[in-house]
Structures are given as C-alpha cells and as structure tokens.
Image (cartoon, rainbow, N blue to C red; front, top):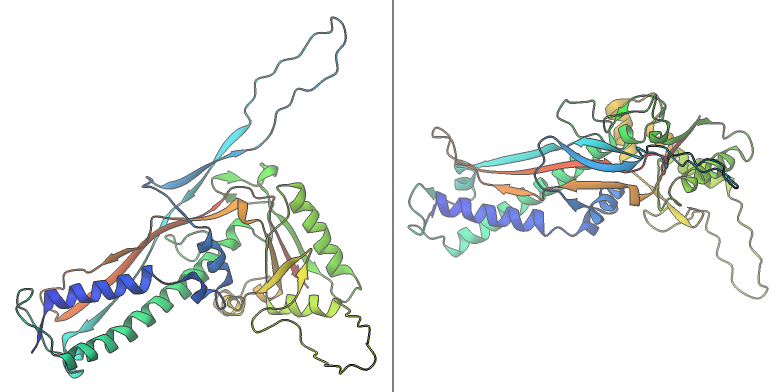
Length: 348
C-alpha cells in the first residue's frame, strides 16, 4: 500500500524534529569543541527588532578625593554604562526527497488525504532507513557549518553572524564591535599577542603568562583555551617532563601526551583544547595569521550564544514538483559582554 503525501510530510517532520532537538551536545563535542562549549551555556532570546542588546559598564567615574575640615566636596555627573548591540542572524538549511526517489526505495506516495493510504511493514522499514540517512547527514552538516561560522569574523556575507574572529580579533585596536568603536573605546579592546618567536627559549610561555594576567585583571581567569595544531605542538615542546624512576618496577615509555582527541596539555590548570576546525578555516579563508598558529583564552562568563530555538518546518511542495521538503530556521547571535576578559595569541 502507498502512503499519502500529508502523512509522509508529517512523518518526516517528526523524524527531523527528533534528530535536531534531541541531539546530545556530547555528540558534537570531539569534532566541534567551540560549538559544544557555546551550546552548553546557550541562552534563549525573545524577538528583537534587529539586535541582541547587552548593557555594559565602561567606567566607574569615581570622584574619590581626600578632604579635611571645611574643604569642599566635588560632585560629578556619572555615565558609567553603555550598550553593545549584536545583530542576530538567521541560519537556515533545507533538503528534499523526490517522490521518485522514494518509489525507487519501495515507497509509493499518493496525493490523497491523511489516513487514506497506509504503509506496509516493508515500506515502513525502507522509509525509516531512508529518513535515518537523510536526517543524520542533515544534522551533521548543519552543525558543521554552524561551528565554522561561529569561528569566522562575519564578513563573508552580509547575513552572517559575527563570530570569534570578529569579536576577539588579532588586531583589537580598531574596528566596530557591537556598535562600539575600539579605536576610541579602550575598555572595549580584547587582548592580543601575535608573532611570538618560539625559537627564543621561554618566549611562548612568557607571552601566555602576560595575556593570562591581562585577562585576570579584567574579569577573572579564562576557563576555556582553544588552540590550533601548530600552537599545540609549539607549547608541547616547551614542556619538560621529569620522571623519578622507581627501582624494581616496570617502566612504560610514551612519547605522546593526552588521550584520544585531548591534548593532555594545560595552562594554569585549564586544559588546552585542540580545535580540528582551525585547519578547515585556514583552507577556507587563508587569513594573514593562520588559525593553526592561534590560541584563544576565553572567559565563558562574558561570551554567550543567544538563539530563539530551532524551528522545524515542512514547507508545502511546489505545485509542479513531486517531492517532500524539510527545513530548519535558527536565529542567533554571538554576544560579547566584556572584551578585555579574553585574549588571542599566535606564534610566528
């Protein structure tokens, strides 16, 4: 027996909804560490006309002074806050399965009313298998592209979200971020140290120490470190492991550190996470400072992924195309609440 087009659309929407909404964050953790971290702390935002707006404190405007006796007290008018506005953007993806493709897999679709046609058991198995592959590839592809865009600076498209490279750039003394000009607003500059000479003993660790202190001075210790392959290798070579041998016990020598995808490297007790997507970004954008040479000190208290939750849509098919259509919509913005709590480093 065939299946009706409305029943097929309903079944497809339920399947896609389950795939996208019930995806555990851990399933994208190894390959997409930045997306995993942001999704773990994501926040919903309600409808906004154009921007996600956050209030920030730019100064204390303190009028502190010493006084004695009848010395006059000075008063001042204070304007200690400002607003940073981050435009939200809409990420979309969609696919279709032609009715002839379904027919080639043993599933016949009729344009009848819902409930008019019922699937045979064999057709159910075939349909589930076909949808499984389509939905799984759809989910993985969407998250892969979303993760890449959350790294980039947002200039590749007028409709792209501003990502990590735009919010915490390698040249933080200029540019407008969140509507605030970093050329004049010194408080809105992130920290950066580039072209670190790894050939000089101690230079890399000294630069990391300096950037770490700069972050602590402006909001607390970073809790997430993300790095590319070249930076990880350079840092690994600066670490000397000393072992006190125990006589009489069997020794195991392992030149590698870490387990699986974990580098096994730390700085100030925070694990250094290797991001495999840095290589893809270098091939995609060929930046002046390669991603593989970079390391980011992030304080996730001051950077948020805001979104309006994923919308699963089953559009009505065009009158002249026999196919089942599905798509997803996700409105989001990457919001920076404090710039100088973060840093980016790069080796020469």
